[in-house]
Length: 556
View 1: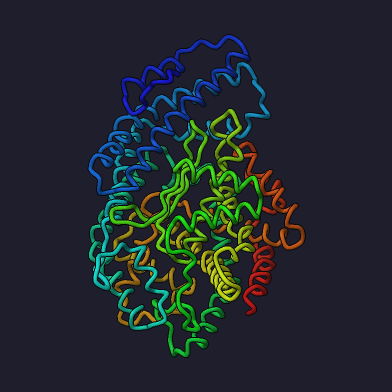
View 2 (view 1 turned 45 degrees about the horizontal axis):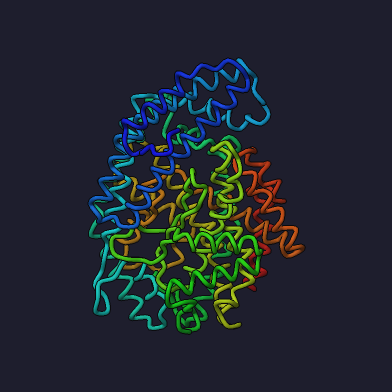
């Protein structure tokens, strides 16, 4: 591939793909080289798309950045998808012809067979429309600002006021934020209806029974089924929701309240001032460098390198997209981290989390094949959630002893909530796509039923019913990456197993974790878990044992 190729220009992209499609293959060696050359082109194109996406999310209100992203997804991606299907078919034909290292390519071949079976050219423009809709969601959320305490603030920034001991202040901050979200509720409902319609049509075009079936295949979920997800939902309802109820009962008692309101969940129950681990993002970065150096000098050097290369955008600001993510620059084999830090305890955990993703990407960057430089999402999240727990013993670099214990308790309570919230969101998505003809009113009612099934009724929502009805609008995954959420629950169970192993032998647990990360996507999901010394399992038995460990940490 030419070093100077600009892969945001279609006229330069098309000949590169066309040459691969037409290249003659006359030996096993030339087939192997063709595979590597294809991987190099895909890495370069992915990186070009990643860069325009990063630039757009860093400033969603910048017209030139938005236009560059739109150009890429409207002009480059559709053509690339058609070529990718041609290359997939060529690969399968040549693989059968040359029988090239079948064991090494087992996972890769399985994925390509699925992609070929799912590809329908009529879906390409529909998927482009989906991508544009998700950009619209980013812009709507990124533009949400509120006037509070004398100045305009972002919604992530408003979260720190929910940590204030003054209950009236918390309530005001929560209500102002909630009302700002509600201003766009109809816009978001309309946007989701458009997404729903597009996704249903995409599934129909592939011959799948519904979008859920399509998406499970599209996400390459070879090792578990929708019924396994429903088992997870039942296990969480039976074993984890009662723990959450005990956590909230203790909080209510400590706060001396008759009922907990939504603005009472994040604050310290003993009315202590919010944890302030840092005041400037430079302090957050420096602290994390030291944490990773203490945990493992190699990881410390990697994170320092990410910072020195300027591959961190951490501060919340107007126009910035919500949330946090790590994204890999595939050709450079480097990692970029994005988040919305405002000086809260959760920011430290978020950076631990995204750094775990970065360490994963760097650990498997040696694989020549691009597909093996990305693990399955369920294990990607083990990398990040596992790093949160591996880094936990080093919180003293941010806090004194008492604040360290406060932070740790909040984190463990957050793990319980994460398991429940994952079940809530995943269960809701199953309902949405199993009932494609549902009305908006039916969707709202089923959201409420599901939310309350998983502990939402532990809070007093009197007078706030409209906010409760639209809580799901806050979960970007429902809009942007449907069905990508159960991974967090599966991975949290894996991370808890890593923590249990580390209590017995930290060095061995960390070594097995790093070895598993280095495998990337070259092994099936259960084998990756096994390599890390943990089980790919979300049965009642496994969750019961893990929840006993969690309750021990929380002294419940």
